[in-house]
View (cartoon, rainbow, N blue to C red):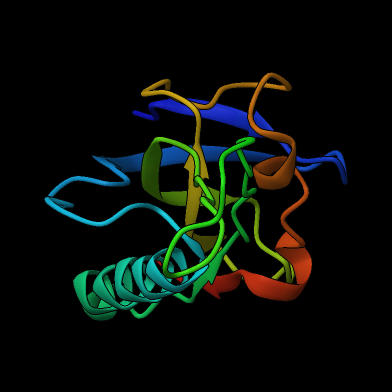
Amino acid sequence: MSLGHVILTSGRSIRLTELRMSSTYAGMLEGYPCKIVNDRKVEWLQRAAERSFASYGTPVHRVPPSREYPDEPARAFGPVEVLPAVFCVGVFDSAALDPAGDGSALVVTWFQAGPKVPNGEDADPALRAVAWDDLAQDYEL
């Protein structure tokens, strides 16, 4: 059973088989979102996803997050910079890259505005732009 299907801009259809979501700024008790904090957060979340899915043997790809800069005065660590509110980790599969394979898979990390399951052509444009043929890995059943 899949949780959803995403149509990539390449035209390939990929199935979402597992999805994990968390609040981007969960646990941030002090300070404010700025480039330094966000760069560390993006790297930490990526490493956590890689550790979590290491046993799958599937590559993990990060979709670079969008960043917004509210019109606020700069503070001690620079201007306010805000990432989308939800961090996502999804396991996707699709048809094999090589006709001899049974399928292909890729773990993808991305940020999005809200807790919505990506589906069809309504999925985030950055997620839909994933270069599946360059990043996914074939598997055998």
